[in-house]
Image 1: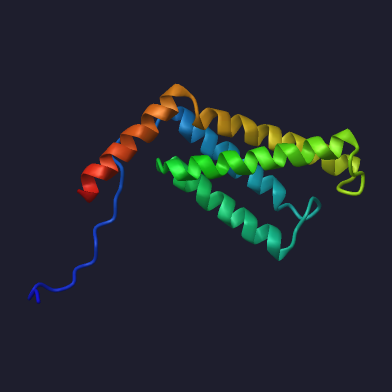
Image 2: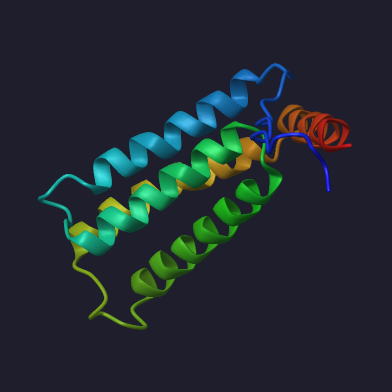
Length: 138
């Protein structure tokens, strides 16, 4: 048994400079959430919880967590599929025309944010942060 006290583990904070493009993607995602929580569009506890998780994942992506970038991509793809199905008329009960336009624009902004997270400068940032984290953990 060790006589050393149980010290809290040091938290990993990347030293790699964040590219401007990742910062822009983050703020696009935050703006999207800000628009979604405006009461006239939709507001309930489920939307609030989803959007809090959404911002947290966006923040983690901004910090260089590659898994967060993948999750954001999947959520954006599902959103675009939902809008596509709604627009195609497969299910007219999903949303009104105003909601379709609003969500269509929001998901278009989301798609731009996700594309920014996969550009070469963003890829280099995520790889550098992953390498830095591997060196930190040991």
